[in-house]
View (tube, rainbow, N blue to C red):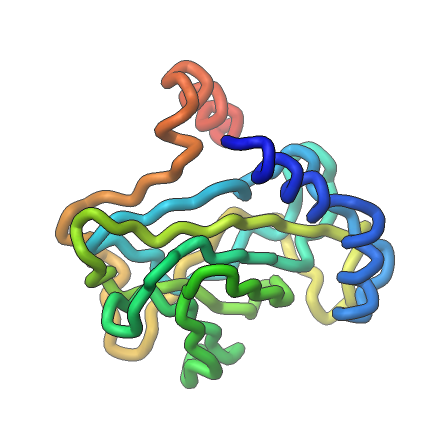
Length: 196
C-alpha cells in the first residue's frame, strides 16, 4: 500500500471528514474504525460476485453500532458490460432501488442496518486481467434509532427474487488485496478471532 493510499485512509477517518459525514447523513456522534474491521482494499476477480446481504451490525472490539458504509471505486476504464454494479434493495427485497456502476473515483455512502440490503450479485464479466477494486470504510455510533436495534449478528445473506444463495462463482474466486499481502498466519489469527 502506497503513501497516498495510507494518507487517504487517514483522512477518511479524520475529524474533518467525520464532521462532513455527520452533516451529510444527519447521524450525530459518528465513530471511525481505526481497526478497519472488514474494511480496507477489496478486489474481486472475473466471475466473482458478492450476494445481496446486510452487514454485521456491531464492531467486535469497540462494541458500537455499524451505521455507514463508504465505498470508493478504483476501476479505471470500467465498462457497463463488465457488470459489478452495486445493487441497493428495498427493505422487503422486492425492488432493486438503485444500481451503481463501480467506475473509477466514484464514492458511495449509504446507511447500514438490518434491512439495508446490498451487494453485487451477478458474476463479473470483465476481462481476465481486470478486477473490481474498491476501498471500503465503515463508520459507527454508540447506539442507533430504536426501530433499528436488533441482536448482534454477522453478515446475513438474502436471495433476490429468482436467485439461489447456494450458487458459486464459476471460478470460485473472491480475493482481497489484503489477503494477498498478509502472511497466512495473520489471516488465520484473524479468522480464529471470529470463531470465539
